[in-house]
Image (cartoon, rainbow, N blue to C red; front, top):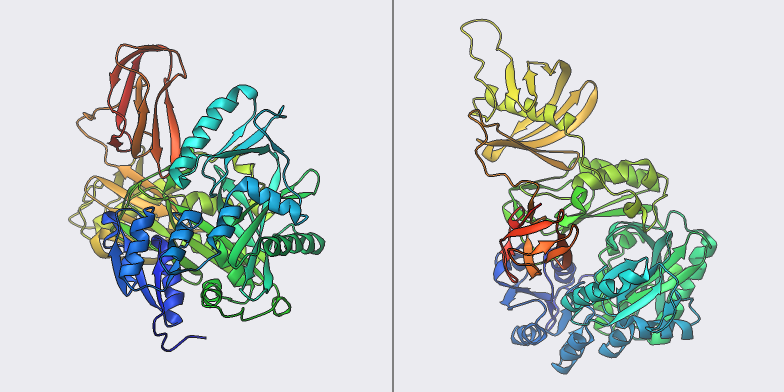
Amino acid sequence: MAIANAPGRTLLVANRGEIAVRVMRTARHQGWRTVALFTDADATAPHVRAADEARPVPSYLDIDAVVAAGVAAGATHVHPGYGFLSERAAFARAVEEAGLTLVGPSAAVMELMGDKARAREVAVAAGVPVVPAYAPDDEMTFPVLVKAAAGGGGKGMRVVRTAAELPDARAAAAREALSAFGDDNLLVERYVERGRHLEVQVLADGRGHVVHLFERDCSTQRRHQKVVEEAPGPTVTPELRDRMTTAAVDLAREVGYVNAGTVEFLLDDASGDFYFLEMNTRLQVEHPVTEAICGGLDLVAEQLRIATGEPLSFGQDDLAIHGHAIEVRVYAEDPAAGFLPQAGTATHVRWPSGVRVDHALESGQVVSTSYDPMLGKIIAHGPDREAARRALVAALDDTAVLGLATNLGFLRELVAGDPFREAAIDTAWLDRHPPEQPDPATARLLAAWLVAADARSGGVGPFGRDGWRLAGPPAPVRVDLDPEVVVTGDTVDGRPVAVLQHNGGPNGLTSALLTLEGERHHVVGSVGVLAVELVHRGQRWVFERPDAFGDHAVHAGDSSVLAPMPGTVLAVTVAEGDSVEEGVPLGMMEAMKMELTLRAPYAGTVTHVGAAPGDQVALGARLFEVEP
């Protein structure tokens, strides 16, 4: 129930992006005054405009600055969202010492459960099964998983298959963990080759009430980070659900947990056993699917109730599963290039209707490599899993981001495919089935149609001839898209086209619904002077204008090592004149908390080094040259 007037209740949201907007939405509905934080790069971001007041900070990770901003703004409570400081016990303690209330567990509980090694001990004490772990001097059976003892989200994790790989994996995981969480302590556990990632949402108030909100399946992952989440688990039996949810509640009681938390488990496909992985002492990215199957329950509203000393508004017996919900995370990344982060300006953004969308991305917004690459989430709910899946596919068809690469096309193909439909995807499935470059054939035909439509409406496109005739029907528009595509009034490249809907938009933007040989296609695109850009089934395509006088642009040959993502150069390990063997590391890059090693394409001599540690480089920048 909304509070019409909440004197003295001011909530500082110590985060950015879609989660900050989502928390503020509920808080304002509940009558809270909201305060946002922003860095220089985020001064005009959507989450800043969504708040009643905004305060600048040098970094979202600066504990002193964040707490000082809350005190100066008169905040009584602090919601950390997820990521950043949300699981830092030092931050929780600083909030408490400043006289503010964290919307989350105490610093002591956060410190205990945030350390994966100590959390294992709590799980054992609560009778919850844990994955076998190794001490540094133990003889290990490979493969093993090296992971950060603090934090989560897939950061600081490496699968190690041989003893020889272990030292480098430890070093890389420690660097990544230190960068993401400020803590480079590691844990080494047995790695389950084929399993499902299941987690249980729990809520506990300060009066001894602990409830679970059923389970989520988060098995579809890339680089140990979740991509698709759903609730309830499609393969979870009532008996397994009862055992897992009981274990989660027992663990929360054992540690004296208060507020919202998630207990994560790994289900071993081979044995059917489940193991405790960790407890996330915060709200999860995937919380909307739980809200959907619990009848529209608002988890943030419950968090605020608990933080103000009120009891939960419901009991365990009041909860039941209503239908099925699936969520996809939209990232600025290139799936076919190993999910490397991308950056740029989102020149046009269209989110779908008819489903829930949590986002903070709008047309004209710059996406940098300074923060996590997640742009938003699309959540579909239906009476059963297949209904939710179909609604999600339709929603992804209706989503478009122009200006930079995203994973929308990959998500659409994944959710529409048989493995996901059959709930056959485990945590390592994407490792065994990496995405391939999509086929441009259909997109090329749709691009030609866009160019022809632009030309016939008076536009000056990059490819078409004007097709003017003194008399008779318009001439075909010949579009040189390598190969040339001929568009007439009702055919593209000789294939029949029916136009169901065609809307021109601002700045040359076109949205069209077509049938090509009877198959429906929704396309959003823009015809510019040098290129035509379009999105079809989520996938972004850019077809550039051929140079009629020859291509005089500088192209990097096979000897060049280019930046595969925009980011920061962490290290350069060679100098000009060095002799290197094939595969030897030349340097290292980092973007959005992801590290990438750049290696020599073959044995030879380094003839050019184009960057130094600390340099910010663009996608495609020429970093090294190795002559065979």
